[in-house]
Amino acid sequence: MEFIDGTVVNVALPALQRGLEATGAQVQWVVEAYALFLSALLLVGGALGDRLGLRRVFMTGVILFAAASIWCGLAPNVGQLIAARALQGVGGAMLVPNSLALVSAHFPPEERGRAIGTWSGFAAMMTALGPVAGGFLVEHGSWRWVFFINAPLAIVTVWILLRYVPETSSYDERGKLGGLDWKGAFFLTAGLAGVTFALIEGTGGSRAIWLTGGAGVGFLAAAIYREEHAADPLVPLALFRSREFLGANLLTFCLYAALSGALFYLPLNLIQIQGYTPTHAGAAMLPMVVLMFLLSRWSGGLMSRYGARGPLVAGPLIAAAGYIVLARPGVGGSYWTAYFPAVLLLGLGMAVSVAPLTTVVMSSVNESSTGAASGVNNAVSQVAALLALAVCAPVFFHVFSASLSQRLAAAQVSDEVKSSVLEQRAKLGAIETTDRGGRQSVDEAFVMGFRVVALAAAGLAVTASLTAAATMRSRTPRP
Image (cartoon, rainbow, N blue to C red; front, top):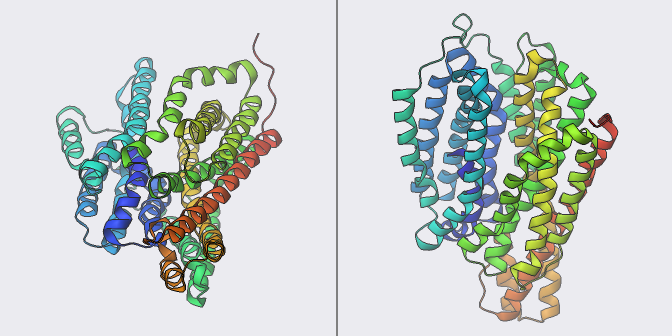
């Protein structure tokens, strides 16, 4: 459910924007509302599983996620859709960390590796098939069906849980919810919400918006102080005293921020500007996911042969080359020459990076802290996705708006067309105009904004590579 949802919604955004007459910022909130609560509450969800039982919390998350998905599909306006997505994020924060924990808890060590491998295989398969299936549903049905598909999956999951999965017996009956760091969770959620809101909505320059952003920064500072002094913190800051753990998380942040920022705008570019069908747009990134899946075992062996430093320097650089190639196409052109080479480079770069990165995260801390280290790294990747889009939003709008004005002037369209197009610029690529010059100006301005985002992603990927070079120790490869 979660892996499908994480990849399929972007493909549905153009149809969703058109159906609900949403602005570009509102479309971004459809993604950000989910990412905000997922990233801020992910560690809370894992802690709840430890205290109240893995099956209980996981099943609650599944039910909440499905109920919110149905609300998403029935939402009559974009405001309700954003609220439903926020609730979906809360459900996701309960089911995601406890999913893998259930697998670990119910299989003995000698079978656990195969069980986790099966779990990972399903995750990769759903990540690959989600956008294609979602594109098909959008093209032949409605964007609402993208959310409705979670309901039957939830019914089957709950039935399996009740019939076959016993509750874990080792959870903490003593502290239950009392020992959970609720203050830290509140400060973190409020801080991320304030900063995200200011970045996405701050193009108008309202004082209230920037005060909200300032309050968000204050809440984040309070969260750090709280985690430093809490008896049972959500984020054990002592883990970051390890140079390699700190470097691995900085690398994770840069790598996933780059990926999330670029992949939000890519389906909008393909569907609204390049004229792809939702199904074709959903399939556009399929080679990247397939390549990552096929090379996962090979990339895992790179660490034992060459150590972590080499792959984690090279992998992000390959991904950076992919983003640069992704920035090259204009309006029109064949997928195979315009986007396919970039997709392959991104797949290779991520494949080289992900397995060694995960290994470094788990091996750079004491064995007793591996669960906390994994949770923190997962949360870092989610926060990276959240903040990447929040930062990209004002940058994209500024570049798009300035380029649109210049291109409308160069196209010498009538004042009426120019006024109509500029009044709609908050819709970005969904601007409606029947004038050929006006439409071409919109398309070219959107491509210009996309190029800036893709190049910024390349810069983040290079930063990830430099981080690996500075923080990862060289190891002598095994003979």
